[in-house]
Image (cartoon, rainbow, N blue to C red; front, side):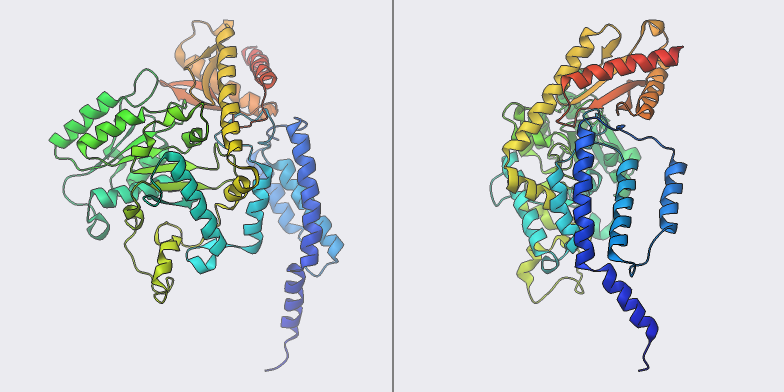
Length: 501
């Protein structure tokens, strides 16, 4: 074969890009940058959201692509360029570690959790078969065991897996429920009378989306009425299941919430489980946010009855404060672990080692290649122990009560529920809007929220409650303190005056 100078040059560039020395230089700079960034952000030294329009940010991202260097540039020049790009990412990103970030159910994650995740990312530890990710598999199994123990399930009787987010976790669990409840639906599809999925009226949108994907149909999602605390009403559930049975409608599952996204309401799981037992219906519980309360002796009563669910979804990347994405699907009956999929893939799974199939995550997840999602969780637990998770729950839930008390004491604010966790929904109604139509008051909340977040002072979200716009806070930064909540109310008042004027 003739010598090819082009391939020689290509190999030199590849070797330079893979250089451990360059990685060391870039990594040392990055750790220092991140530490400085976190220090400034935690001291509220930057905007919570450095607002720029999508067009402006996309233009900056394009410009960075056009300014790329070549791998064969001097190492110090490449390391400096890396630091410049990292600074762009930090300066343009959302600052969740600022105590004034109290928005979506995405936490100010434990920083060292990201370092454990980085080990998996840099070395590209992936899963599907055990021998591609042996330690990733081991870490995931260990975390599934500990979560099942927290629920109260008997050791060895349950099973589970990690996956990429609560939406995919709900889809996976409900697919399992469909295959068990409608016995040959995996092989033959859904036939006969249309099955239904019975859900909490405020169920996360991913549950209805799952119904569409699973062939149930979003119009066959039956929503159960709520009680005064916006929890699924067990009596209404009993009536609805009885009605569906009399109609001969197949029921895939009942999907309850612990807790519901809009207001953080925890369903009465023990009563719901008893209703499901009487009607012989699979009980699925979306505990993506609230599952962490099991670590807290103060709050675990909110999840009484969770141990009677057939399937549970639990996001570690919410109230366990590990970096996204790290969500778990857990099955009370270990026999259900292979019901999700009934397929063979001989090119992937090794028939010479059938005993290892138990540890091949690709048999039980929608993903084939899957990142080592549990590394951050496993690392944080192994470093700090489980008491930290209880502390995080106790502190943030207490802050939810603190905010509720401040809202209740302020004549120009209206708390809309008694919070059970760290989610609080309310409205700001200044004197100028007293007596205004609900539509106007609701629209005012949305405009007020937009002004607030674009100012960079705080980050909160909005929602609709009973069809009227409202403000919603999730206190999911444990560094937030009561004085930050006072600052939030003051900032809302100030921006409201600007809107009214």
